[in-house]
Length: 119
Picture 1 (cartoon, rainbow, N blue to C red):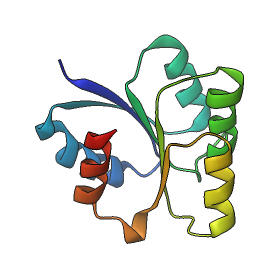
Picture 2 (cartoon, rainbow, N blue to C red):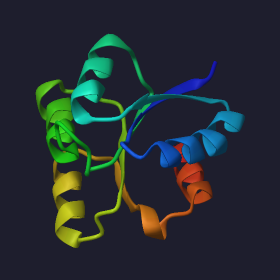
Picture 3 (tube, helix red, strand yellow):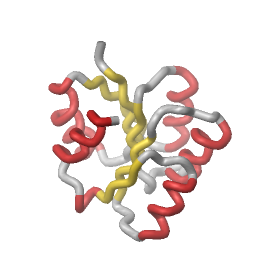
């Protein structure tokens, strides 16, 4: 059975690139383009993993992470994949319960896929 991943990302081109990389490996991807939509989807469906961009509309990624980990007590891994490369952002995300943190410009999608397969 395929693993279901929620991608919380506003850049459609990036979502398509993730789909091309992940779907042949047996993953089913579900997309939410903003934080509000993501929170609704998590209440309606089960996901094996979440990939979260911090810079998203309506409800920012740090707030989404707080909602999922601290308030909803979600136990599944959340991988942050963002444009934000500051150490403070990484520390905050990890303190809020992120499983791992990657900067888009420094992370090939093949490396991300390999990482996710090990989780």
